[in-house]
Length: 364
Image (tube, rainbow, N blue to C red; front, side, top):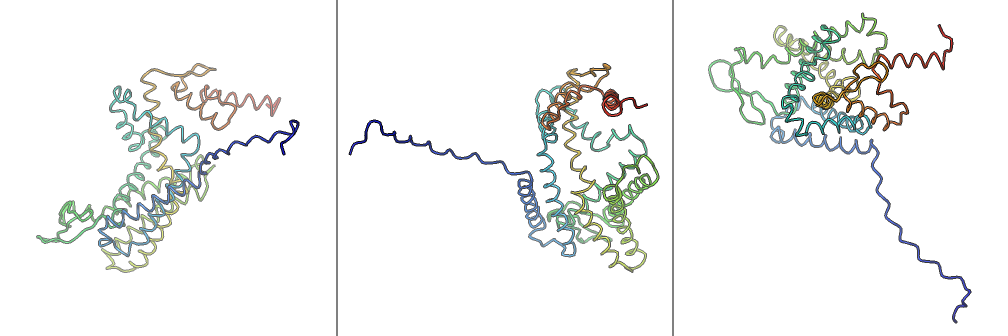
């Protein structure tokens, strides 16, 4: 039967639901996936680099497991860190400056010089204190030397094998390929076999100074935390001292107490490697990212793009750096990004004036 003309019209067909845009993964989930991939790649590299575990020393298994956890922890925290607006903007500007053809044409040696002075010799610390700079250099290069020796040995990439020849001859091999042959009685052989002892001496000197400063200097003790400031120094000293005692036991005590010292050394090393991604040592991983920002500021200075303080006229920094800082503050939803346009001294004056005006009116 036909419908009457006043009958309600059939509802129009609803448009097909559009597919919902995929939500970005939370930083923790993304970081877990990336860290798991890096840890798996390290396990594969250990297996392949040790020639299918033929060169892998099973006694070093706890160290190897700790390094895998270290890779996971460092990657996880680094991925979470770079997901933050400030770090993401810093890395973006750094990489953009690094691959800029114009910047390379103007200053081709800028990057190597900054890597040497900012990362290697850390000249920025010398402006604070010569003693702190020297102690940091001892600690830095001692840790670098220990890591360069320990990690390949732990993974089975780096081996010493006996060789035929006059005297106690050895061959140093990496991934099974001979690199150098040497006699353990000469200077090169002694340095290769006692490289970790040299590293331990450097670390003890550097960490000992900072530990002394943490216990005696009022400016250092005021805001220090035991787990964050003292534990890393104590851990490095324990590792270094027990490592030296292992050599002392082998050379002078004919192995007396060696097993106990080896266990204590292993526990201290494993604890430090597990602690590293979540404590103060993480700045070691963050520091290279700052080289890109230093290069960014340097390239802006070459173009004389400088920004002066709105209050006193003193130089603040490069104009692109100030604008980058303002952008970061906007990303963080901070409503006072104009403060980036003031020098540090004027910021303190303005904060004090605001405190006196709004909080402690009439405070003398």
